[in-house]
Image 1 (tube, rainbow, N blue to C red):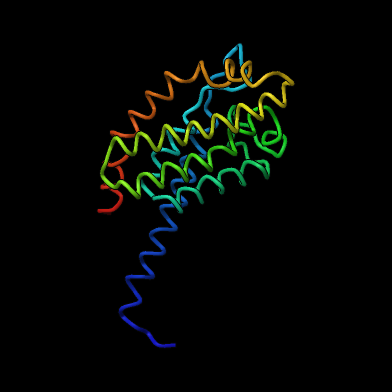
Image 2: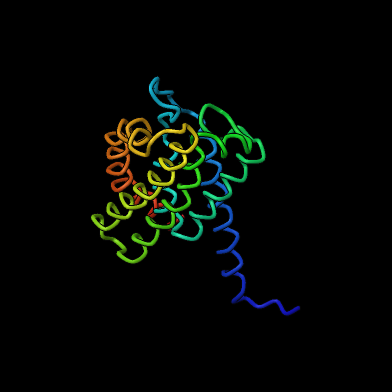
Length: 187
């Protein structure tokens, strides 16, 4: 095997990328379990979507989606990384499972907007809003099926109470995300 100096930076880049992916996945897994139950809803308040917003900024579309999938796999095998320090396939099959799966689409949609409209804060915000909308649709449809109620009733308990907080998370991510990306790229 030839020891080519030009391959060293590429190897370092891949190692660095794997380390950052691992760190961002770990941060999601650490932050996501901390949640606040809402009396009228099986869906708790959490910072999981905020961490996904940040992860997309830091890593880009593919690596961020991979982080979310890895987070879901870790939770599915039983690690307590989901809300209220829960885990297992039962959580994915439960009332909030649609929102958890919807996080993959959130990362993909936001990531696409961040990549296509690099540096455009308004486009990034639109990507987060569209990504959350798709996440809400998945989650609400699954919640409605789980609770055997209408989509509208599930929307009222699974989305509407969370809109102000999610709007604040989107604004915070739009401000902090590009700055964190710049820091990570300069490390």
